[in-house]
Length: 195
Image 1 (cartoon, rainbow, N blue to C red):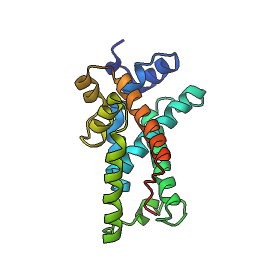
Image 2: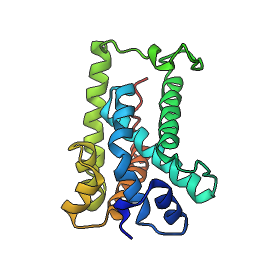
Image 3: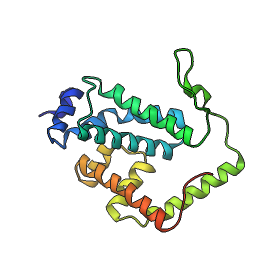
Image 4: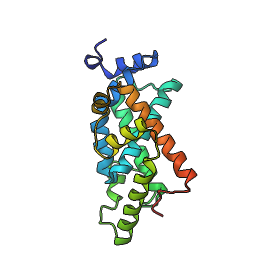
């Protein structure tokens, strides 16, 4: 099958029939648009990466559960998941009031686009330094993928080509890097919260 020539619906169908190659094609087909949407709302590359990853974890879970029924509307469905995760983030961090969007009102109009205070900037810099120390504890393959994705902003397709693995393997390494990073954070009693 020429994956790049088939529709999203056909790729979803192939993935549901255990064709593991279909999902990375779907992700790479839409990652730029979804990531750009998320970063335009959160204005933080690292946070946008987390939300992007969580979006596709939800997509995979929903597909595996057999709960997907948005025939032919894969991208709008994924964008809605990303949108909801962005709203969840701001609710959790109490940086915006809890209101629902209406036709005349867009919830994203409330997001504070102002400059961070000096204190916030110092905290953010410390968090970034802590994160760099923690990721060095990851296995080499996971560290490589995380570094290329997180700090070089490379697509999973480019990472796969550069490391001579499939896109699926690159995605898997990224997933395990995040899982292991969370374990390392717990073990070292490190929180990346800005509270």
